[in-house]
Image (tube, rainbow over all chains, first blue to last red; front, top):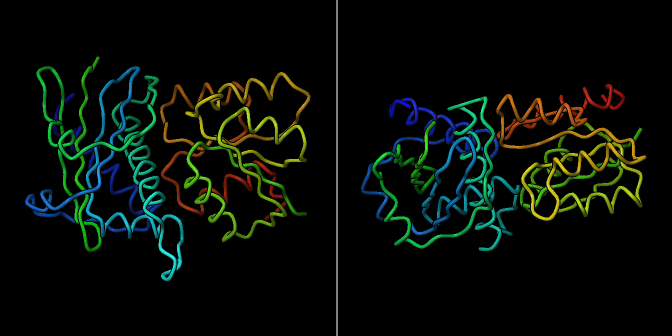
Length: 154
Length: 126
């Protein structure tokens, strides 16, 4: 798979999910923003494709996205547990959207998303034989960084 | 005519989202029921009249595929709409073959959910 098409798929999937179900517009963010992010989650997948998607997000962005997704009132913002659950659902939807974009004939299975540590997120990188895309978006007052790794392309 | 809806998803925030979207639509829903997997959904279907089921595929305990098989092999007659992130052709065909009446891919706009329900329910609530 050409790296540029995977990058396009990741970028387009994130924009589609955030605008359609989180009512959040995204913009490009400077790379150094990634160092200010502190909310991590990861989802792995297997089947026709194998790999993972890791998200790292600023607290401001998580709060905004969770409020939009859940339709929370301004005076009753989502709890931290709800914010974490929304992040997991965000990872689930972006990952599924990417996999659907890069191949429509192979079955895949998304494993349950789970929180991950900042150190684990930082360790995510390109490995020999894998395809790797990293992209950081500006989301409201914060930012969202995605790391998508495709380990086993057919 | 008011409908009773069962939302099946292991993510409580996703169930909340779908219910919120439906409440903001023009559908006349008299009751919402929720289940976090297929097994819980079958329990609800066994004790309540449900007009339409909205279900995810990937769930622990009993997934959406197993739920569709169970409904098909039972006496329960209820339209099922699959709501999932998996938009691959092979998955769509698989779910429709198992008896799903509708298929909605996440992400979806609120209007897309309304249109799919309208189609599945035959426009009776439009």
